[in-house]
Length: 133
Image (cartoon, rainbow, N blue to C red; front, side):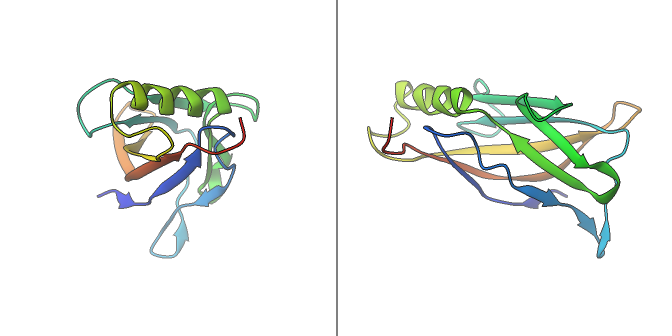
């Protein structure tokens, strides 16, 4: 079962580059040899992905990056353009009023070498409008 972790970012800056460490019973969960997929949507299970991420292999690309795969350390790399596009699409769809944050949802799938996906985290994905443009 996926762990619920709320995420928050701003449309006018890249997503915060925090490293998340995954553990099971106090032991680091290894992501060695795994790939990743993550979508952010207005509603779970329906509609277009407002942000769609796959495995990032370096710090310059949007995606899910295994900072230290053996130690269970991942980072979500989402550039400012993708954050802006998600907020703009949500606004165009009438999901919030101008100047308000938008509450979206996400999940992260870890895909093993056999192609079997497992949802490891899920939750709300709030995008604030920011002030400085």
